[in-house]
Length: 292
Image: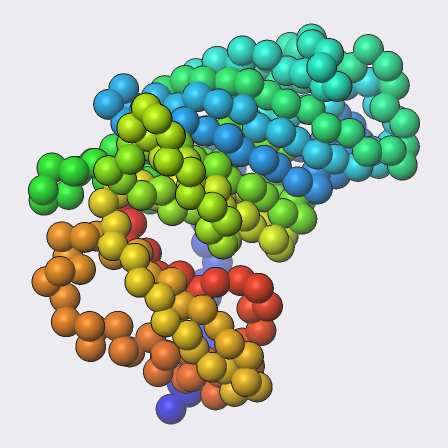
């Protein structure tokens, strides 16, 4: 049975009536010329996660289209994170930081209609969430076996708490690559489809994920734990084959009856019945145990 309801919502008090907006608020929220001048098409995150130090390091490549001529653009990265360099075409770019905004300066005018790419090399200890997901930040916890169990909550506070990006809801990249290097006894799970797993010689493993569709920056995520993984296939009403990908804490997976997961195809069938066919294309539908 599909249940619908209506309700009357009384007028709510204006909680921001006495709030004094700051320069930091303006830099974060406004679509200034340094933001509207370019459209991000692709992010490529390459990040090493040092769980013992609660520290991340690496770089992010930003590909974009030039909307209007500019010589300066704005990215965002929390000021507690250190920028090591910003480069484009093997040339070091100057930049200025103001609160969580990063203004990147180009030696030549970037012309309307052209494409560009820059790389931000950075590192730091991202803020830790005190009460995720209500408070944003990284979550550094352990499971019952004292094995690291790591996640991030940034839906409210923004993706720039842990990686440099154009942190505004108006601009979704067309695709995102997420490459995470973690200790080899753990598994790193992110958005999209797993492309490859590379075992390194230093007891770390890199997991390369790819999101092949538009996504909000705050939805880009990382999950690291001792996961057990298994797959099955769901056949949609139109005959489309959808891969179901499960990542369950290994300690829980061994104790769970596999019948526990048989409800998932039934749930999807219910969605299709009442909401229409599921057309995920090349996307994998995954279920993940998160630590937030």
